[in-house]
Length: 284
Image (cartoon, rainbow, N blue to C red; front, side):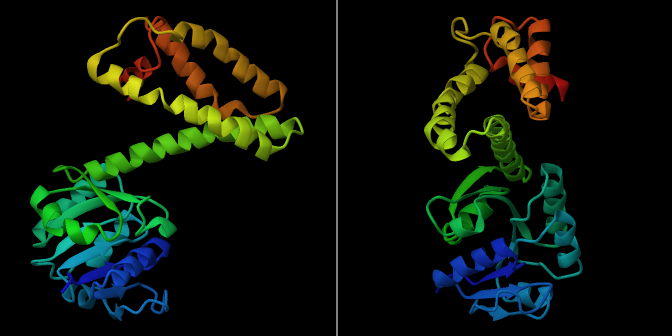
């Protein structure tokens, strides 16, 4: 018999998680603050969080915000249960919830879902997990039902950190793409031909430089940068000026230009883009 699971929270993501467990044959109990949500699910419906938690040794929590997790679980006997918290949170929030869960008698894993709901249960999805390795190993097979599990360490805050790091990269990339589209559409050019023929191929080609950048961060620069920061900082002014003359708000571009200027002023003009990472850490 497959491990019984409980899913707390039936928003779009929680529903996708429960659906995936049901499709794989796991006895599944669900609870949602508003009764009757996702009526298509054939899971057992619990009237209270306590009833839902009592039904299964493995409890998946997917609620809206971190505060809701504590308020939902508070006062419930969690002894012997494993709580897998897939609610979006900060690293510090994850660590606090891990400590609180341990004091309530539960084992705890924190998770960061790198997928949208339709991707759950497909090879394209993966989920970061952090917490005690033995807890992850015990439930790995069950968690694989949802997505490829990526264990990132014992520190409960690491899954949230990895999650937020990837989301930061995504939003930064989308921000640059949105600025590019504002320039193009502002000149009465069509977005789709530009995106399909030029924007996506260009960004895809530029992404191949990331492993080199990561290697420099881990091992130090190798040789002289082909396109150094001094050169890039000098040319960057044209990006901001063009935005202004095209009546496009440069708010997404300006911070990068400032960072390039700071790097050159700090003596990194002969280095490549990887030097900016250290500057960001220092500023933080």
